[in-house]
Length: 273
Ligand SMILES: [Zn+2]
Picture (cartoon, rainbow, N blue to C red):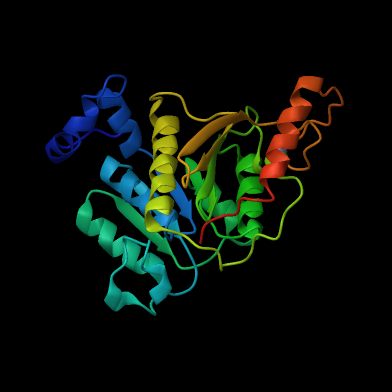
């Protein structure tokens, strides 16, 4: 693991002193590479908290240009950047906040051509893309290469979050075997809602990388932020999953209910922009 400089020791002092964190956890963060897809209201804000926490290297992925209607939630952006690639500005902002973090900006979406190399070069991926095509590609690549993935999505005032570790937990296809039409961009979103989910997403990645606390392994956290209702549901690990399944046929009856609950969620939740 990489050693910490005097500047880093001072910068991260308040988190190093956390019970269960310490110097070793900080060194693990410095030695880690995190891939963030869909760098927008969700992915960009998650990247901010990873950068200030001292993750050594961030790979930021997002195609397209900044729009004025992104500005109610994309806090790494500035008004004068509208019309230009988001990830370039995200890299610039994060480097100003923490010059010790290496940041690679990739102005592209998740594609079959780039996903394997991106996942292989990271220790963990944050799935913050805004459509299921990109999400499915990232999930399959993380399963293929045995890399953890934090799965975060929202729609209006609702959100969900889980952490996937291939071989240990259900994957995204286990959770949502039948894909709803989630490729729309037109749902409403408040920056404070995407930001709330983003903080929790960054926290999950920090937990997996450092061993701090207990990440949401095999659990789906569902949030209705309009009512401030939070619930944890057991996520169903499908032995017949087309991506991660082992083709077993013994499916305990008690798990069937969880499957129904999770599948029903797919009708009401969709990924953030
Ligand atoms: Zn699966």
